[in-house]
Length: 141
Image (cartoon, rainbow, N blue to C red; front, side):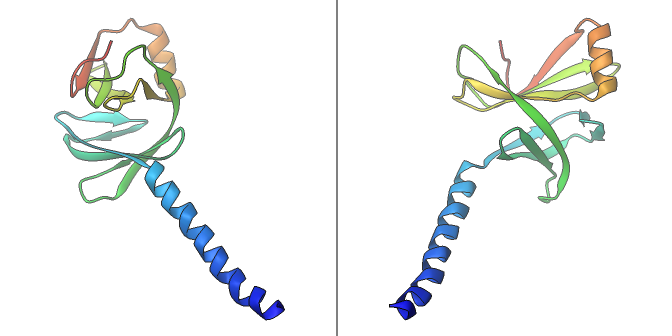
């Protein structure tokens, strides 16, 4: 009996680990986007181009370049809308001549992610009125 347990236990553990990896891979959210202008992701500025946004964990967003390399990561907080997004959308704030990514919405989802501001960005946001909002992929109420 002990021999049976010694043989079976490693196989059982392997199956459990395999299920956990599969579940986490299925919950990972990936958005491929083409951003037509320079933009800030947190404190970093990036050129226009093809990017991938990956949310592998709740409230944590990765930015990957066209080669799949992670070039930025930020904490986020969940936000809700009364209606689901008609399309996947990125919302940018435009101030001082720069576009700053502030929200991410997924198609058919009534919840999105707001990126946390750095202290200097937060101070600037409270001092100014919103000059304009630009959206890649459509508008959001």
